[in-house]
Image 1 (cartoon, rainbow, N blue to C red):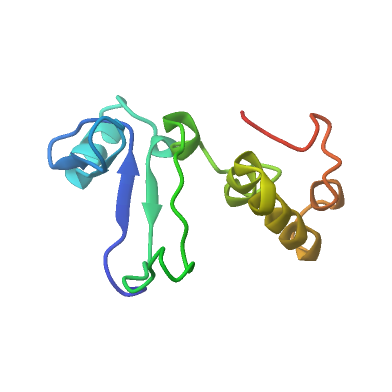
Image 2: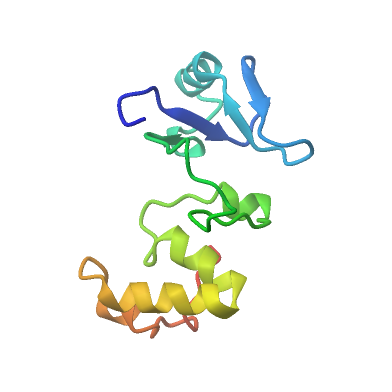
Length: 129
């Protein structure tokens, strides 16, 4: 769905938005209300995440995706300027084989600082910002 519309995700109950799952207080949609709120100074553009492109045929039963619980602050975390991509942070927090998968993937990346790839960050390898 690379040519389809993006999905707006945020933490505000806006006109035109709907909660992703009951009780999460994580919302999708409400684009016009989000734009109006940003222009009026009620919100920052960085309060909103746009996701472009989605796979509709991936399922958890064939291990193309896994589902996991996540705290709201982590799901809505600002991703700009993180020393480590959010995906890796989440995988490390899951522990076990997921943490190991993240580590193996990190050492292969050439676009990250060497300390991040080697897990030698000042705070022990995890950023919870």
